[in-house]
Amino acid sequence: MKISIITATYNSAAAIADTLSSISSQDHPDIEHIIVDGGSTDGTLDLIDDFPHVAKLISGKDDGIYDAMNKGISVASGQVIGILNSDDIYTDTTVLSAVAAAFADPAVMTAYADLQYVDANDQHKILRNWRSGPFKRENFYFGWMPPHPTFFVRREVYARAGVFNPELRSAADYELMLRVLLKLGMTAHYIPRVIVKMRAGGMSNASLLNRLRGNKEDRLAWKLNGLKPYFYTLYLKPLRKLHQYIIK
Image 1: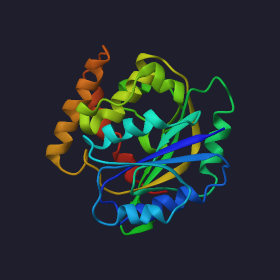
Image 2: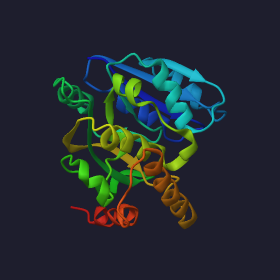
Image 3: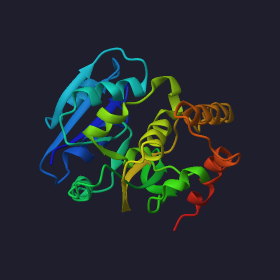
């Protein structure tokens, strides 16, 4: 089973080598790593050249990270597609083998797992644990969503459901998962292990203003899909993060 991994980059030299290493060291035998670069000028492209496992490199101006991801999806040839950001890493060499095992069941259309936020300068320092838990479609109404860097789909899911809506900026991944899992009711398989370490940060959580903007975009994500959240759904979404700071 070929798995395509898409990484969007733009001046990512500070962290991209770790991301590339974590993919090149995977023990799964059939991986297509696609890099979509927005025109980096900081040495990112030179670092990518040092990793011969990279199957495809698309370089040029784009309209943001989700536009870049869509470009990657358009050229992906794997049966399964995942996204790994340019400052994230897989936790060990067996991650993609575990993903392939989940998709060995033909009824599984999507899969997701757990994630850890780590210190930007120390990957061993865990700041938050995002334990997703088993899939229940109704959990979306209580502010739940799986962590997008752990979310894998069959290529046909994008063919049926469409790709990311770049206009939503920070909520484009949330909207896609609402569309695929709640509106269209596709199946999801939970892999009960941490498979991604994400460096702390991110545009939706960087400031109060961004969080308020994110909440507005979350509401639009429901509206665009003809779905109606409970009055408290989108207030619970950020509150669900609080227990992630209890490190066990």
